[in-house]
Length: 562
Image (cartoon, rainbow, N blue to C red; front, side, top):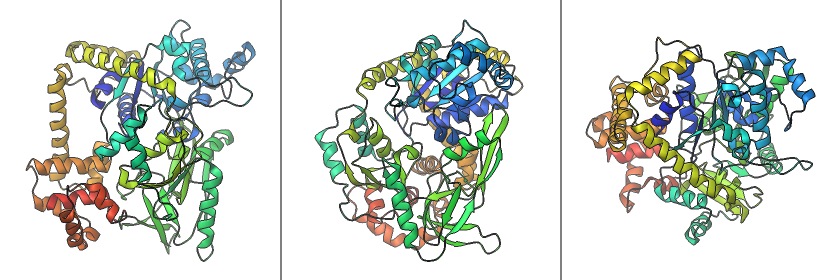
């Protein structure tokens, strides 16, 4: 299913399970839906199963939002305590849409508790009290966990609350992260549960052995390894560390949860030469969550850290905000430089990131899906460097293989049904939903007519339309970063659009040459020679040959002008 179709289904007010492989655009689609809701005066409750995931989407944990805390069973006394919290009751009463991200890590019992609270406060006879509930995630990724004194955790779909919600499954099928067809095949093989001998051969070909590189972040299964590597590497650098303390605002409990889940630390220790990773998106400045670089100095006026990214851009960082929200209200805020030491990080904290390259030690992987999450962080096989892996790191939960086939089949059925819905019918359902939520109809963006056309024709028209929108902005003189921000796409997607527009002769070679970064222009002859010596002109071998010095997008531009 395309993102456009999923977005149309979301706008009808149906309960939706939004899923798909890593890089398929789940977060982007939810972001588009949230923007649409807010533009009509509807404030959704944005939550996630973990604090880290909640920080990524600017929300709070579903445990905190619903008032259940750590409970996986709500007694009568506990329900009374929740109902006595007037602020919490009012919050749920005024909510029309509940979004829960990273649903794979939410225990079925916790999911049932959220349903129980919503029904108690709103409408007892309706799932989640009549809220539109949108659950987002991929069950092939990290599963729920339980404490040693608890019964084993179960996936959320095993809950009776899941059955009552009667979700429409939207299984996104497009790939926006990996641009290496062979690597996409490798990840799909892992997802099938039966990785072939070819997969093992390819993974072993990425072994580093004793040749550990500090050029890219290392991913480990355990925190102890991450802390050890980052502390050792920082201490090896000369001079005293500059320490930046996080600023906080809000109630102690909310702030503590936000601090704990933020990728930037409360006390950020930096030295010149430190390898760092950006933890926020700032397209105007030219960095995104996952951009890697080195500290090359500190600003003389403010003492702000100066980072030189791996693609040669020098950026002076400024403090940025992370917030936790309750509907339209901000309940906690922290301010810190969007950086963290990046010699190493845990696989758990890497979930949601996109990296050009990474060094991974999967030899201590202990959970289903852990290796799959790590491997799917990078764009291509050329960006993967392995220190080792064990059998568990390549295993996906056996239960998921069967239910995933059901999710895919259900999604295809729903997509077919919506393809034959009349425009007037979809328009009316959307209108009723906005009115039912107490929203405003003035600026409702009704479903485009192409949604009612046959699937093949619809897909072709969508592709042409999205490229032409990029073309219009490009011809206005907008930069790639500006176009990406205006269209809410990743810069890599805009680069792909530029390549297609060039191949279709809608832009000229001179137009492409204008957006080549200076450091690429200076190395143009050398890069061209590498492409000319290449058998197939693929990007991954060239990227590897230069050790990540030039990004995939920059190499794509050079290939175009050749």
